[in-house]
Length: 106
Image 1 (spheres, one colour):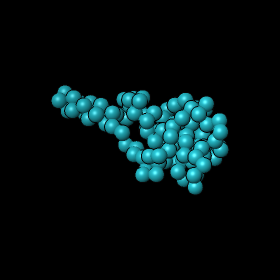
Image 2 (cartoon, rainbow, N blue to C red):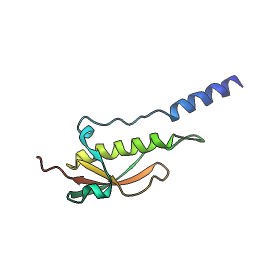
Image 3 (tube, rainbow, N blue to C red):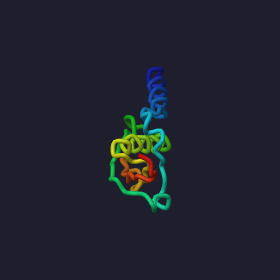
Image 4 (cartoon, helix red, strand yellow):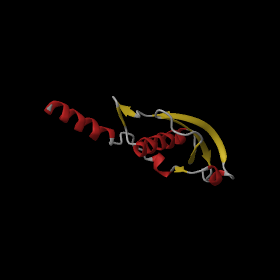
């Protein structure tokens, strides 16, 4: 019983962890909604995914959403984007974003 309790505590702790970190360049990429990108150039669409559950335990939905947005921001840098907009909901740890170039710099 003690081992089971320790295992449950470990899984619960891991399910709250954020494993995805933004790259230095991605820290300046904004997460916006469609109304914020009317005057921006659509660069491409990216699909990202993270683990949404550990064994039978669902991860915190806010953590999953944050990690998905961070992955999208990391991807945006690859395509010279400075803004991402989610275009689908989160489903089983997967989400799709549009990458935009809104800044006139560069």
